[in-house]
Length: 329
Image 1 (spheres, rainbow, N blue to C red):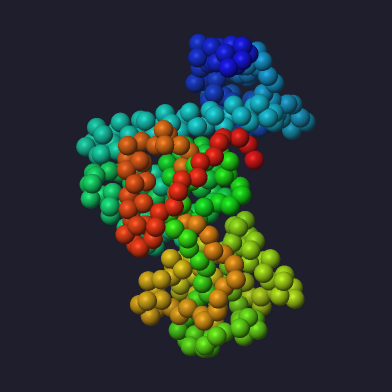
Image 2 (cartoon, one colour):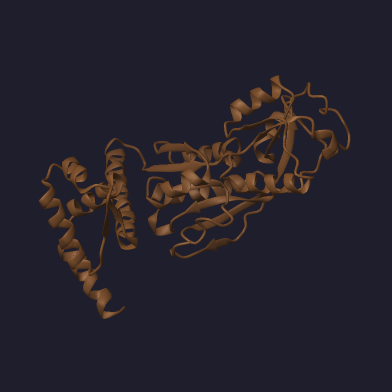
């Protein structure tokens, strides 16, 4: 540890106040010191002085002035990010104390991607509740682009689903549970539903239900389409809602590309049909993303173990842990 680092740590521990961090977060959100000061109920000169004191203490410039207000420097962005994490941890601590006071055995907030929402996650919740019947569980659904920032800021304890292949991997830890693949599904009345050995030429005339543009799967799909003589679907519906996708497939002659784990039950029960076409992309690991073991509450660690048990019970072998550091990508 360098002398400069030790000095800054000592100043942070002895002089840094939560009110100063609240101001930094507010300025970052508003892009304006006056509005941030108004939110905190202090004068603009007092807010400016607080920022100047922080810059002196940490020996860095936190904001740059522009003709439209202020923008955080790279140092300011770092302070704001850590400030948000501190406030999230304070909120989580308060919530956990409240849950314990009400007789609940802790609390866990889990983000879920489509690939884990229909089978793995419900089974893991059953496992957890069997051990901790009073645990409080909150589920947030979304894409990696939405859930990973919430994970990094401390709003979410764990994210379950397809592991990100590039972005965010250097800021989190990951545990792979099993490999999943993408399948093409249609409604039972679709012209291709009962066809054998379907070719892409047969698929071309139909519309598609596709994942959002920002997902890695969509990038793989687009790359595949480009390789098929710049193929463009006659109709493309972008959706991550499985209930909506399911209804659309049953009512229209569309093709959906979804994780096999998600559609398995509907295919088995005869609600959807899987096309006899080997999807040439999209295989990848389903697993757990989290900040670190030390960041998880007892309930969070218990839920992580419950996910591993659910994956094993479903006939899949758990893979090794992949740990990464906390540098910026």
